Image (cartoon, rainbow, N blue to C red; front, side, top):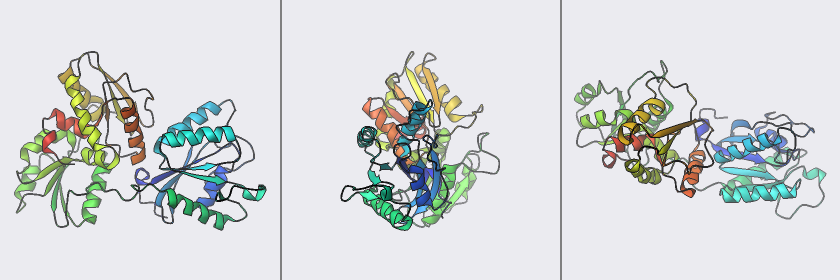
Amino acid sequence: MNQTVASANRMHIIVLGACNSGKSSLVNMLTGQHTSLVSDIPGTTTDPVFKPMELPGLGACVLIDTAGFNDVSELGDRRISSTRQVLDRADIAILLTGHDTICETEWRQELDRRKIPVVEIVSKADLRGMVPEGTVVTSINRPTESRDCVIEALLRVMPSDSGDVSLLRGLVDAGDIVLLVMPQDSQAAAGRLILPQVQTIRELLDRGCVPICCTPATMPCALEGLSSAPALVITDSQVFKEVYAMTPPGSRLTSFSILMAAYKGDIDYFVESASALDALGDGNRVLIAESCTHAPKNEDIGRVKIPAMLRRKAGEGLVIDFVRGKDFPDDLTPYSLVIHCGGCMFNRRHILSRVARAREQRVPMTNYGILLARLSGILDKVVY
């Protein structure tokens, strides 16, 4: 099994159904392991269970086992709420049917509203009588046949855009020299690079490019050592202005965060929404959303630097709220602007679900990199 693919870059497949409908057994059958606890006791699965794995034809996936959506226990509402939150990450849903018709109908409608492709399965077929013609059926007595049947059904509904979407699509060619300018502040763990930097370097190598790494302080030396200008300069968004001033006229410029915005989110909406900065003033509310849950330090870009820049532009009366990780408001209408991080810890579906929420509520939403390029006055100079 390929464990080298980060969970954020895997297809997320959520398994839904009533209590004791066979969700955990199905997950165990697909993984070939005892991933989820199986029991006849209702409510055995509480919080969602995530299992990274490789499925034939589907590639690197994350299977998500969930609590029964008809859980009437004391904590049932909280468990169902957790399942609804995880729906934001789901690329495909497996819905086990024939156990609670009312709940199943409600969840079909929810999945349809979210435009999540669905595979409906009649589980425990060996315990059933007649099943609808053409329905996918599974049985623990025929695990190999059942597994193949489920995988074939998943392949039929797999989203057309779920292939290998590239960070650098259309920006580089084999043989290009690419300069990566990477400031190493206190947020960077000793001995490590951040995930977007690692992903970018790996893709450049895979594409036959020549990546050259430096810091803003060593960028002049790096450029001096090149016989020609780099085809592309990629930097951290927080040093955009400094790096732009040193970028040769023949080189294109972008940032890791902007690359992530195009890779994971809706880059056109992010760019369009950046114009909302001009209307911000005292009393307006801004939401800053971070996908990771690190403890912020005094140089933190999302908690310290961006808020300071926003208040310099819009006034000290600007109200700024923060959310981290899976926390994200259902109601975004109190906000004049939502600013999201690059989202390297989220899969694409998760980011797009948040963009869709903002669009539906007509709330502008942008990204760290786009915001910082706009504030630096160079948004029209960068590529994405």
